[in-house]
Amino acid sequence: MEKDKKKTKFIYQPEYPGGPKELTKFIYAHLRYPQAALDAGVEGTVLVEYDIDYQGNVISTRVLHSVGSGCDEEASRVVRLLKFDVPKNRGVHVIFHQKARVQFKKPAPQNQTSPTMQVSYTVSNAPEPVKPETPKEAGKTYTYTINL
Image (cartoon, rainbow, N blue to C red):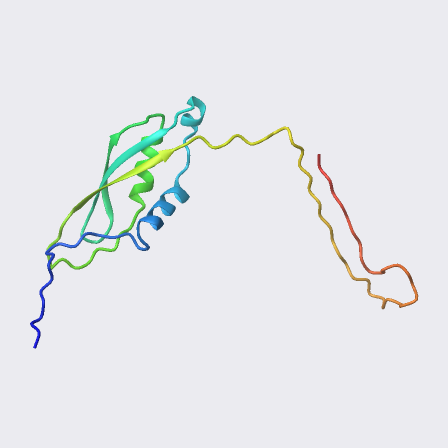
């Protein structure tokens, strides 16, 4: 008979549900570029260190590498929204420390020179039955709106 193997690790690290790719998706889905940074043309990477409690909540954040113009505060705000899965650690309540890099890039300018065109149409059925010998399609109304 084979002996029951003991677990090799005493403390297990927290994991974000879905892994690192989902963590990155969550951060950039909730990240808002600060208006002060847009006005100043600030870009860069903010390095945030954060603490995770035994329940998986982010309890504190520290900015290790700053960019300024409100980017640091925004990166800290988004990191505080994270919720991790923490396995049972033999009844020991542990605070974990992790780091995240949050990159701020200016959004691409929208091309204002090209005109926009919107086309909308409505179809309504007439209450009368359509006769097969009429060449027109009765009962349909099309409305086109073009904004340039």
